[in-house]
Structures are given as structure tokens and as C-alpha cells.
Length: 88
Image 1 (cartoon, rainbow, N blue to C red):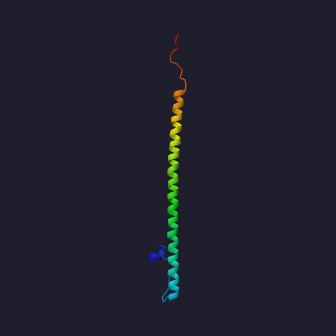
Image 2 (tube, helix red, strand yellow):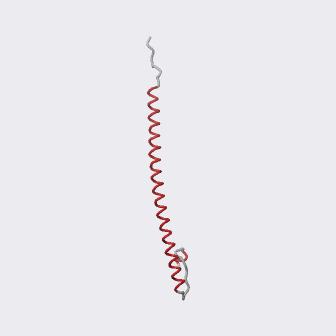
Image 3 (tube, rainbow, N blue to C red):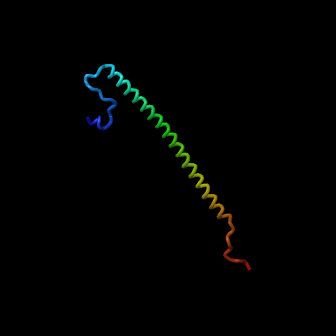
């Protein structure tokens, strides 16, 4: 009863269950399980691809940010500063 309440039952059969009905139910359950496994594999591959793309994006953004910071600091050193005293 707990399995039914938790949704882990593919199909409910009454007794006596004709053999052809039982075989059909088992075949459908096996097909459903195979389809779920294929979907899980496809999802795992997609997740792996997405994670790789996100990791690369983080690397690219980090490098771009570091490059921007270095460029800004480099520009600061190139700008003339006002002299603290004037030769007279």
C-alpha cells in the first residue's frame, strides 16, 4: 500500500490476472524504464555540457575582468600626475 501511495507502482493488477494482460503490463513497464534510463543519460550529457560551458564562461569572464583591471591600473600609471612642486 505504501508503494502505491508513493507512486512507485507502474500498473495495478487484480487477481486472477490473465497471463497476456500480465505480460503486456510487464513489457510496458520495461519499455517505460528503458525510456526513463535513456532520458536520464541524455539529461546527464546535457548537464555535463552545460557545466563545461559555465566553467568556461567563468574562466573567460574572470580573465576579461582581470584584463580590464590590469588595463585600468596600467592607464593610471600612464596618466601624468600633477607635480608636487614646481622648479623655479
